[in-house]
Amino acid sequence: MMAHAAIFEGPGKPFRFQDLVLPASLAAGEVVVEVSLATICGSDLHTYEGRRSEAVPCVMGHEGIGRVTAAGTARQSWLGRRVTWSLADSCGHCAACTVWDLPQKCSSVFKYGHASLHEGSGLHGTYATHLVLREGTHLVELPDRIPDAVAAPANCSLATMANITENLPIHCRTAVVQGAGLLGLHGCALLREAGVARVIVVDTDPARLARAAAFGGEAASSTELSSQLADVVIEVAGDPPLLGEGLRLLRPGGHYLMAGMVHPESALDLKGESVIRGCVTIQGFHNYAPRHLEKAVSFLAGSTLPWASLVSPPVPLTRLDEAFALAAGRQWVRVAVGMR
Image (tube, rainbow, N blue to C red; front, side, top):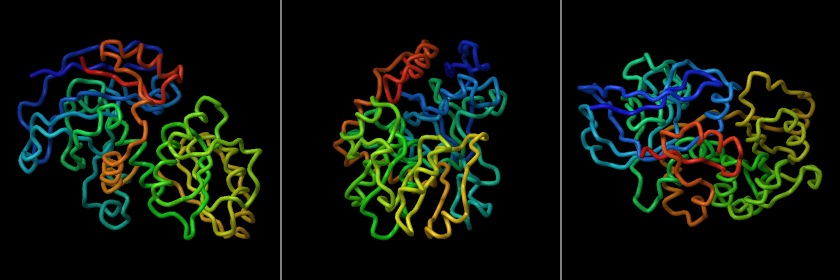
């Protein structure tokens, strides 16, 4: 059997389409997923535009869903199930996996959508009709009531935000979210579900801010906010000057939680005094553990919020360059890619 894949060969180059042979046999724990829908994450757009470096050629994409069509031993009960999966494969044995509770920082971590075409089957990304998942990749079955377009980003933005909001400060009544992209909107909803009474969202883009109210957020500009307002500030915008603004908003003992400033050039201007005298906790978050993906799916299964309104109608895989151009225009929070 063959898979049809979009091959990324570097920024400024159109996707090349190629048929790749699916493995004739699978190792224990491996599965083949027939992808039904993928979405374009902001990190994919950064790679496409050359703002982020990846091994090329490769099959990009990590947000998506599909059905298990083949399985190795120990995973055969998954055949036929509609699933999502952890975006990182972990060994389950190293200190990060067993002691530190950070499987996403496994000593031999493998990330989907980021590996060379020449490694293994090459089918490591969601911009293909099929994806081969490794033994240490966590699978979660998707209830039929969660639409494809809503489920596809769950294994990135929503699961990451489930990680960020897992341990909020004591007596958390007010939160500020810096950034109104999908991470920020997922954060609004999860914070409100956790009992946070007021969630304020700041962003420089009025169109993005306008979406916040539908997901439990209150739009504001940073200049409108008084100091020592928030119990927690969550940064998901990737802009280093936001650190100072966020610390100004925190009450004594507040938490500043960072997830957006992952770029090498994100130099921070930070005075130790502001952290020490404020008794502030600053913590970074990158990806998530399997339980956070479980929580993300459980949350979506019970959510009545208009998540589908954030995702474009599917663009066929064969027009993937057009899909990326649509994503760059920011009309949609996520652009969907259909395999047909």
